Amino acid sequence: AQTVTQSQPEMSVQEAETVTLSCTYDTSESDYYLFWYKQPPSRQMILVIRQEAYKQQNATENRFSVNFQKAAKSFSLKISDSQLGDAAMYFCAYRSARFGNTDKLIFGTGTRLQVFP
Amino acid sequence: AAGVIQSPRHLIKEKRETATLKCYPIPRHDTVYWYQQGPGQDPQFLISFYEKMQSDKGSIPDRFSAQQFSDYHSELNMSSLELGDSALYFCASSLGGAATDTQYFGPGTRLTVL
Image 1 (cartoon, rainbow over the protein chains, first blue to last red):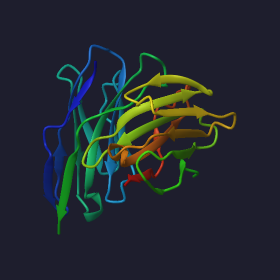
Image 2 (image 1 turned 90 degrees about the vertical axis):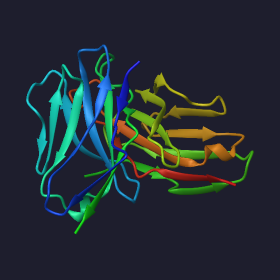
Image 3 (image 1 turned 30 degrees about the vertical axis):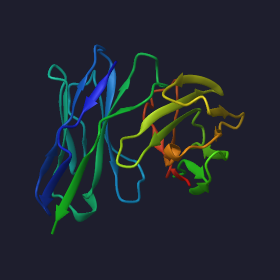
């Protein structure tokens, strides 16, 4: 079974600084997708970024980028120029590609990010 | 852009009562997922449907049932509610069988069982 581990329960960053959230996963599959979701105090789950395992290039979305190391099964999220609105719980998630596009998301336990002015 | 709609947003029930949660996926999305997020926990997968058929099942209690209708909306029926069922219930939708693989989440239904 696949597992996702987020070893940092809490992180903090100064506004305008850069922070990296860690995520590791365990799988025997070669084809899968990885995601970072953000959950602000409103509890809405918001997609931040996604990575296809077959792509070597790291995904980037504006101030958000990932460092995907497939061999090490590591998928970290870097937030540049942190803003107060980035404060939230961040979940790393795994989804198998084995059964097409209908497989479930497996989440890590989350990292709570605080942003200080 | 249209998002996933969930109703009701908040629900308060007594123990042993029944609750029905509804989910309306993004237009043209044919796959629906249900997740349960307890206080301070990560979302846990309950069940999913693709083209009105159950496609996967997770840790869903036997007291819960769900279905997807012809218009692709889904309902999660919960009976004999217990205190431990208090949680945030998310519905997510995606376009299964296509290049799009991302699940988009609704705002959730907060269920409180007293």
